[in-house]
Amino acid sequence: MALSSWAAGAWLVPRYGARVMSAGLLALLAGAAAAAVVYATGRPGAYPWPLLPALAVAGLGQGLYAVPFFTTVLHHVRPHETGSAAGLLNAVQQLGGTLGVALLGSVFFHTAASGAHAHGSAALTGARNAFCVAAWLVLATAAATAFIGPRQQRSSTSVGPASGHASAAQQRSQG
Figure 1 (cartoon, rainbow, N blue to C red):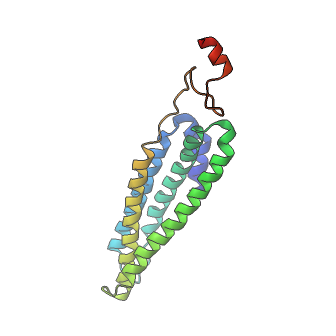
Figure 2: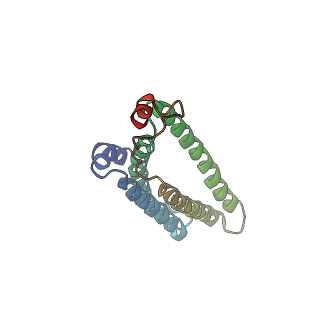
Figure 3: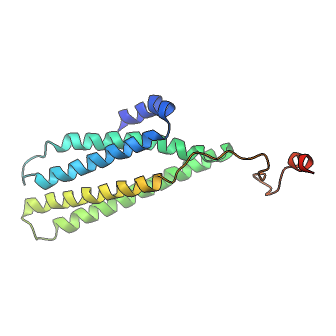
């Protein structure tokens, strides 16, 4: 995640812009789906070695998504609002992470504690279910991200940002 965030910020976003978000979400989805498959096919008591590349792909996707997301969202705010918007975005990211851990942990523990499976396979099934929910959340994120469009240029007759009225210069040129 750290390497892909660095690469996204240093090279990819300046060159490809917000399109890097889509690549990141695709990689994150592939990693979550691969992890679900690893847990679905895993043997109880054995270490799931194929999980390592699956999680690496998911981390790559997370890093590719985060940098262009912050850049794109902060591009939509006025320069004097950037600090407040960045703080709010960070707080919402932390809340989302907390809720995500709670949701995915609840899915895992509910399945693992159900007793419907043997001891080891219940944990594998719980992890598989949690990664399936994570994949659905990535799809929901992709749908929500589709609404983040390019910033619209303000027309010369736009309303002033603070007063809610056309500026004096605009009124003189119109009147």
